[in-house]
Image 1 (spheres, rainbow, N blue to C red):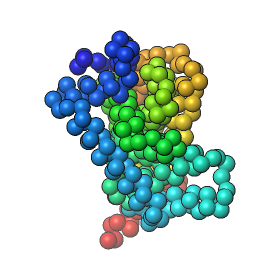
Image 2 (spheres, protein in one colour):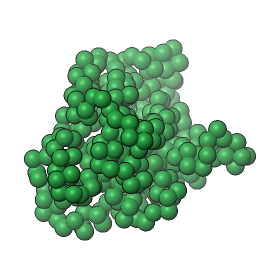
Image 3 (cartoon, helix red, strand yellow):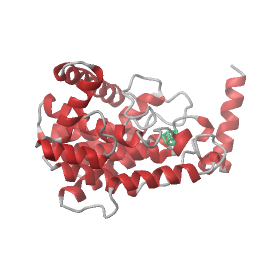
Image 4 (cartoon, rainbow, N blue to C red):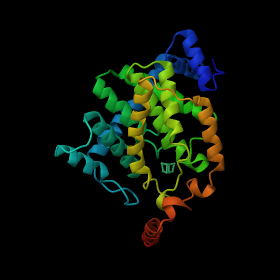
Length: 296
Ligand code: SF4
């Protein structure tokens, strides 16, 4: 099984063996690490516990981030929800809250689970924990979901480096959103094909997302982007669960993302030399921060 390099291989193997994708993933990890599946799942549960701790810490704080550009957005959402105001129902509210809570913790240099990266750390945890609470599933099902998400990220990373500096934000928040979409489908009992389609549908629609952090800090646009792409994952999952398929197979979608990443200007790959980073406001913030830090 160690030769499973792409989604087509994974899907075929899972179907032939009559197993879910997370089962194939944990068997692969067991083979690669020579550790029993039970031990691998225990580690996954530790990561889930760390995700929950980051959410809880983030929900209790409105402390500003290191760069001072974020830190109190989650608190604003919570306050609005307490006043009974929201466009969405409880699950959407939770996903948005948990996403901002986690990624603001990252911006405060708090402990988070990078999933797949620190800048995109709010997406997978928010949907897995919020949906798990909604469905009242146990930690074994949470682990199934996170392992499913992990496999999606791993297979994409076989072709595309998961780093904004290499392929833009499509490879960070975009991949996190696809991972989260697949995890939701697993939690709702979807088929392997639906899990893969959720990833494909989501990836297709974030293609070309650039990485242009203001002042070189993982704050603007990263923090709010996590909230947006968490909800995006819900859309990908909902479409896939309805039986809607990506006409372009997911492996071809990943190839296209790689191509787009290679064509993307280095100025749009974490260098802060274009996009939001070089707007008049972005430049002003960077200059003010530079002056502040030089005077410290
Ligand atoms: S914009 Fe860049 S730094 Fe921010 S989350 Fe996306 S890839 Fe990471």
